[in-house]
Amino acid sequence: MRCPQCGFNAEPQATFCSRCGARLHAARPENRREYALVRIYPSWWRFAGSIVIAILLLSASGWMAAHGQQEPAVVAFLASVVVFLLTILVRRSTSWSITSERLIEYRGLLLTRRLEIELADIRSVEVTRRLMQRLKGLGNILVASAASTDFLIKLEDLARPDDIAEMLRQARLKRLA
Image (cartoon, rainbow, N blue to C red):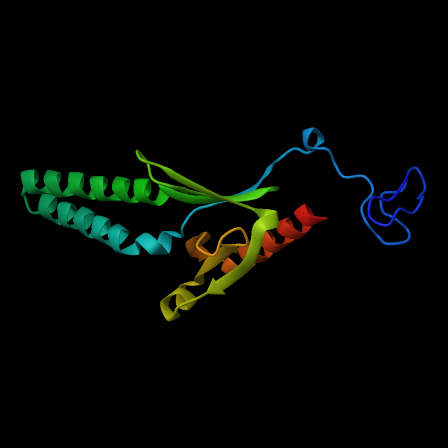
């Protein structure tokens, strides 16, 4: 087989040129399958305020029920359930997927937005941690695309952001190989 880069006659079964190191056999697109590596959601710490409110409402409903105030107790209980369910829905409305080919951001429940960056197009991955995030073991990851200076995806309030950034780097290296 002839090397497309330097023209050297390589062995027929060789994957790389022995002279210049160029790849001789690129996987054809129909042979390459995209697969999911991980689906990431924001940490529960991001919603700690709403969860505390739900717990306080639940506690208040228990106290009111114990003191004979049944109607306000039922209202407080239903309010705590609604706050907790809304918190779960809001958490599920934002997620990120790392696949073998791309990083995908999903936002919204009814009106949705989807952003994608090809792993080969990633220019930089930046991990930032504010003081409160560091205390909770959280952080943000900012992924910038080489395709456009304005195109970036911000993964916010993630648990173990360094591990996720390393997973993204490994997937990118594997994609480029």
